[in-house]
Structures are given as C-alpha cells and as structure tokens.
Amino acid sequence: MGEVITRGCIRSLDRRAILLSIVVLTCMAACGGGKPSPSAAAVAMVNDEAVSLTEFQQSLSEETALAGRKTPLNVAEMEGLKTAVLDNLIRDKLMLQRARALSLSVGEAELTARIEEIRKDYNDQFGKMFGDGGVDYSAWREALRNRMLFEKLVAVDVNAGIQVTDQEAERYFDANRKAYATHRRVRVSQIVVPDRERAEGVLKRLKAGEDFAMVAKEVSIGPEAVRGGDLGYFEQGVMPEAIDRMVFSLPVGKMSSVVQSPYGFHVFKVLGQEGAGGRNFADVRDKVIADLRKQEEADAYRGWIDGLRAKAEIRINRPLPGGPPPVQPEMKDVRLPAVSEKH
Image 1 (spheres, rainbow, N blue to C red):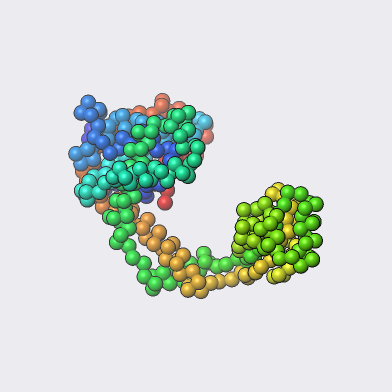
Image 2: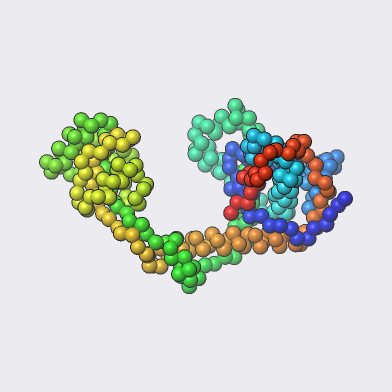
C-alpha cells in the first residue's frame, strides 16, 4: 500500500551523493538521474518520479557487499539496511529534481576535465579499474557526472548563503580553545643515507664545519633533501620512537649522533622549538573560520534536505522488496558501517 510522507528522517550528504569514492561509483549511481521504464515496478514515487525495483535491488546489493559481513543479516538488520538504501535513493531523486529546477547541469567539458584529474591521480591504475576491475566505464562516467552535479547544487543552493564573521569565529574559538591548543613541536633538518658507514662519514664532515643544508642536498636520499633536509615542524609521537627521543632532547642548533630507523641512518639538526600551550585567535583565525564554516554547511545541508522532503510527495510501497533470505545469526549487536551516517 502506498504511504504518503511529508517529512522523514534526515541523513547528511554522504559519499554516495558528493564524496563517493571513485572505486564505488558504479552503475547504480549512474542510473539515478534517469526515469525508469514504465514496465519497471516502483518501490517509491518521489513527486512524479519512480524509484524502480531495479534501482532499489541493485543499490541494496551494493550496500550489502560494502558491509562486508561474514554472517547473513538478521531480519531487523536487513529491514534497517533496506530503509537506509531507499532513503538514499529518495534523497538523490530530490536533489536531481532540485538541480533541474535551478537549470543546473554538468557539461561535457567539465566532466572531461574532472576525469583527466582523476586519471592523473590514479596513473596506471585508472585503466585497470575498467578492465580487470570490472567497472563499467559508461556507468562510472555518468555516476561521476551526478556527483559533480550534486556538488554544484549544494554549493549554489546551500553553501553560497553561509557567511562566517570574525565575531562568530572568535566566539567559536572561545568555546573550543582546547581544540586549537598547541603541543610541543620541533623543527628539524635531516640527512638520511642507506648505511651506517656513510652516516658516520657525513657526521664527520658536519663536525668539520660543512654546511648541513648543502651536505643534505648532496648526499641525503630523503625527498626533503631539495630543501636542505628541512622536515618542518612536527609534534612528538609523529616520528619513530628512536627519532623522537633524539630530536626532542636536543637544544636548538645542535646535531644528533647517527640514529638508525626503518628508513636508514640519520643525522638530525634541530632548527627550532615551540612549547605546548594555548593560541591566540589571531594565530588560528583562518582555521577557525574554516572549521566553523564546515560545521554550518553541514547543519544547513540537513535543514535543506529536510525542506526538500517537506515540500515533496513521497509514496513508498511497503513491504520493501529484495535482500537475501534473512537468517538470525547468534551475535546480537552488529553495526553496518556501509549505511551509517557520514558527516
């Protein structure tokens, strides 16, 4: 029987809508923008558009696989998963409808440019996704187009109206000072070589007066050698224990003895130190504004989706179909990370 819903539970925009991983941009996501054929059974109607049985079952199958469960889902878990899957599909329909109402689209040039960016990031692995990886390129391409459209829609219809003033940011900073406190940090340069004999030779050259940065550029195998070995500032606990113990015990301007790590044999020089303590708002203003804006964008998104749902006529045909035969496992409390809310 059809069920009319004017307001439902609100889920934040998860990776399936905007931050969807490239590997899981599958055919289901690509199909989200089109209307199903008249012969397809409707699991739900979102205004005048159907969520087809095919859409629902494919998405349910994908989410079940992403959950990675070794044991079958019990009855309650399967029903919860089906509800969450349908909720995501309804949300996507609402967003696509809103994008059309605002005449938003993603052109071929935009899409091609994004694909080239992804291709560069993935290098040789990009082509393998669509061969042995089993991902259909056409479906993936349309899924990416939808993701980009959702990004554009949220930017225009939600985020564009958010402004964070210095006064708001400072109040946020005052309420969250601990989050912006500093820990003890050191700024260190290093020379790293593959064996102890070379490291001892480097140390002799430095003690004889050669410039640390010049020697680093000449012999160090670390990627920071081009900067004279400068690793920048880091907090205690970031580096391997042997390195931490050495560099945090040295005064500024002093060099270490040879230190072995899994990466090779190191000689360090401490360039600067910062003690632990609080920060002034002026020191972290940009980060505070960015953090507060991100929080306000998330809050505004939830209210925006709530508004789209409130204005829509959504009819759901229950009971929801699909899913493997439910089997009651022995374990009682099982979480489904693939369908949990993502902020």
